[in-house]
Image (cartoon, rainbow, N blue to C red; front, side, top):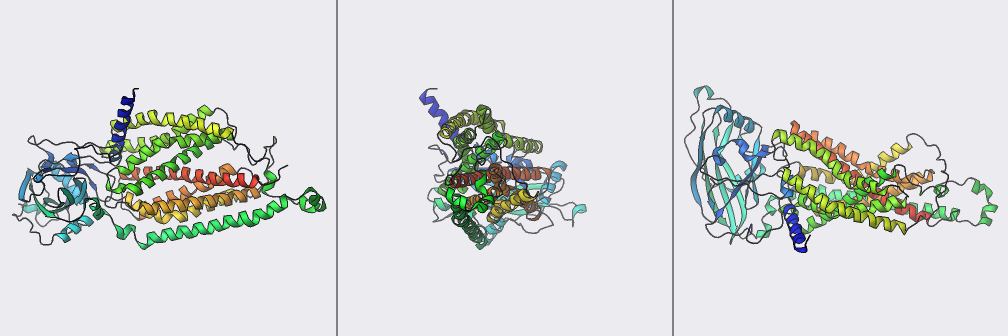
Length: 623
């Protein structure tokens, strides 16, 4: 491929995956006085099921219908598609920059039986919808019903408090049939009052307050209208997304307590590891490093000798199912690098201010860091003398995409059946497959070859014996108990932060922005995992069991089991989600997250245990 074509292809890929890239002259967020301001409709869905969303046209209102208007469909990045956005312009909302507009008719319609039934069901299910003006979101309920007299939306109440002096449009009461009078009919909001704030030539804030609820019944005449007011503000453009943040929730003292809790837990475990390294191991080294003359003088002590030194000829023996171990270990290293890179860029770039930025950056980071997984997989597989490395390399490259593909098929098929906006279109799937083949496969191959070369230059501190040493019999509960205890310790470092993350992910009006908190918790979690892994490995080797590779991995990966149990608890006790689509999406996504967390923690645990084992066995006098 010519250099120019390759460069153009790279630019096209980045433009498709990164929503933060803006072309000159387009989407610059600057307006001339009187210039058209486009209102984009996004999605609609039940309030309690934030991921069960449908296109705005599902409401069946006259706003987007008619041959006299041209509805434009907005282009989506990969990140926006994965987040379930579906943008369509609302040309009937004729808003111009800096120009107020008195009450203006939007459209009129008469409800037939089908639309009346559908609207009544949506209102009774507390359907909300989302609009965007200049990339700023607006949330509002479709209507109200007898179960609540006021809009419970946090944003709508805020708008109402900020516009107490607003004069709402007046109109005659809708003609309600006699047989329906006195009955608790659902009511749809027929008027929208837009309040926009600008600074020079840029929009800074957008508010919308729905009002004028009209009953929904067969034959009801709905006359929609809107008003627009513009105000000047001194707030800067870079601060315009701060109003959507919730510092009272995310910066609560409980969140700070989670940092302190994790730090104290980390400090305690570091002290335990320090005692093992400085006291216990020092005594072991003194005993194991005794001269031959001293050993002859104290034959009784030698006869009772036991512990980790006795397995020096087996401790570096190839673990069982090496290919599987290499695959899960390499995948965990790959994910760890991806997460750290995304977090660092999120802290530096305020991803919360850009739609789809987090999802898009995760895709890019995953593609670029695949070389790390290939390197670690190739290194470990050759270091332990594995055979058929090419087949194992293929397994490594396909493992994580395969896991995601299985859950994706289930979730996406369900979304297609429900016609939800969470459906990923074929175009996005095709782009991801092309990126995988063009970027992941070559980088993974290069990483594997580099890892194999690095492994050839390193040897084990102790020679591996030809005959396996018999492993002493342990109580049947020894391994399960150690695994469960080892898994719950890192969970104690993580569970408070998990509440804030789940609250942001599984709600439509909370934006997670405290990436610094998450990064601090993640660093402390890594330290805790390493300490737990070293402690478990020392206990296992002292029991003269040299199978430390799998045990160090599984003990730390067990943390994900507790996290998954916590997500189940959160679903039933902290949410009001219901319905097959939302349930499938919640548990499918949670299961994927926990599998990724297990790979992350397990790989980190093995790295810590490996460094520990290499350290202690490189300092003993092996026979």
